[in-house]
Amino acid sequence: MNSNFEPIGVLDIGSYQLKFIIFKIQDSKFDILSKSISHTNGIKKGSISDLSQLSESIKNIIGKAEEDTKIKIKNIYVCPSSTNSSFVNFCQSKNIGGYEVDHEKDMQFLINSGVTLFKDQNKSCNILHLFNLNSKIDKDIVCENPKGMIADTLENEMNIVYSKTNAIKNFEKVISKTYLKSEKIIYAPYALALLSYADNPLADMSMTIDFGHDKTSVSIFRNDIFAYASSIPVGSWHITNDISKSLNLSFEISENLKKDHSSCLIVNSDKIQEFVETEESGFRSYKKISNNILNRVVNARVEEIIDLINQDLIFLRSKNINFNKILVTGEGSKIDGFQTILKKKLHCKSLSIEKFQPKIKKDIPDNFDVCISVINLIINPYPKEIPFFSNKKEDFFEKIYSFLN
Image 1 (tube, rainbow, N blue to C red):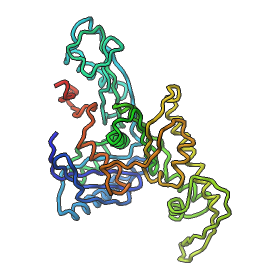
Image 2: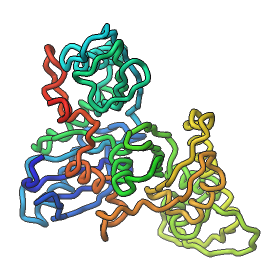
Image 3: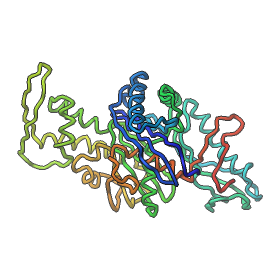
């Protein structure tokens, strides 16, 4: 890849906040020129609810960053909310008949036919990321490059991350209103998992959990393979909503309680704290809140989220797989005691559960974890991802992996 780029942007479109970074790459190292956060308008439950509001929010955050740096950018990478995205794994095989494996006739054929099969079964979806993982000849011999080898059969394993076509088109339409070009739409759990793997390349199994605003994503690297990803539609917002309803408090006060005073851990305590609530009439009323009750509300929702993760990863239990490391990120992961409850409740065991803190992050705030992960993906592309997806009808790919060139 070219190690030098003009300044470019990364936009993380969260349901609660927009995060935007302008950066430049020189000699395979990146320099942050500007970063900004603003409240998201026009998105509900991961989908665009108001095109104009979201477009205006994005224009404002990009404009502010450009003004700070006195630089006009042309291109951006975009990470929309991942609730509309899905992950699928499948394997195809071809009879070679005892001849040499040919690049075009056999290897490229399996990839193209795999994409055709996926598109035939998912006509309303677009592929975001396509991974060519393992090739096997004669059922059990794994080959990094089977080209030229004599075989009776050739098998090819692929992973695909995809999203609803209209959802992608709507996000692209929003970006087009900023007069910028969207270089690529990135699936955030994949970018986060790749950076976790890049920081721990010797780990056999690593999992990244992003405990976000209205969703919790899980992504797994096994050896050097992006093995699994999913998104659970429950997040930190649901905890705030529970506090608000259970204790009859405004959403703003409930959010502050969650961030500053709550814990996932339930301890027997009579401790009472006093908080100020502003009424619409302008009068202030004081309400005493039991920390014990507050923590029980938080604990119930956090345990539900972990139970949902356990259900999502039930396929791992039969394989008795242990993780070298589990990394956590997202605002919800900052709640006191979260890692303790996760270690206790998660059925998948791990040698360590740690905060997502890769080396390249340096002193950049946690809010920008997705943006930093995308920058890493740009600098260090994942070699098992097919890097260019073509819209041409006659051929799905203009470029395949370097070892096939």
